[in-house]
Image (cartoon, rainbow, N blue to C red; front, side):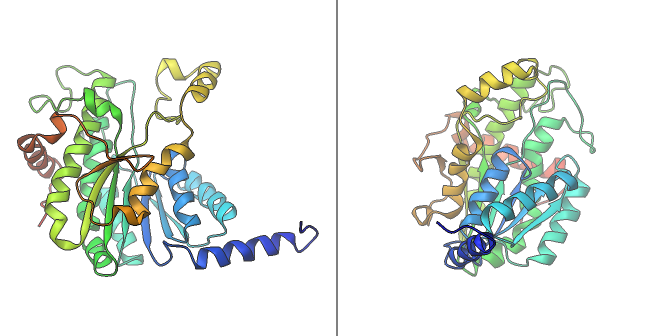
Length: 309
């Protein structure tokens, strides 16, 4: 075993040599919600494969610390940050423009960020926060980065990965009350947003199929993250400890997004949902409703003020 003053230099050199041969070397990946939990674990895994990774989050300080940790862990210095509030359309557009300026070609976009508030809250744009961040944020960010994704597709293909959850099975799109103006229940709003993720993925897959871009979603399983941090059952320290023993680790859950983002087995797969073992997941009957996905798409364009072309 090597030790002594040269040990860290040797370890760094060895890591960099491995990264140089990594299967994702030269691929630019953008991951949202990247400063902790599933997002950070996904970034770390992609960085280990040699990718250039842009970590997107809303807190510059937390992002910087997470980036430093990823660089230290993987030896990959091609890790960047981009600050954006997915509850603000203006912020999303500005950050997307910044990312596209830095990287005219993007090869992987992972929509991981999500919220599950305990109380009904409005976004900067006056939209119910759960649907704004979990669905409309990814919808708008995809629109803004689509030219860069098309450039990425011209150099080896591009992939869009949407992190959903098993809770989509319990979701219904309340087209007559999407934002819960009349009646709002946190878990119902969350399940609706997860169903929206799948509907968005399937409709997007059909729309980008001719451009060398694929869109797939993933179900990481029940993972120990702080997504439920606002809810009473997760606030006490002893309860958080219990949940962490029952639920999967972020590193285990991140294998689903990593597979969809990097595995050669996914080449050509489009409009599919995968689990962390790379198995195809049959999503709910409601998620496969073509009329619902087209209706949601049109409504999303109206709410965000953009049109996909």
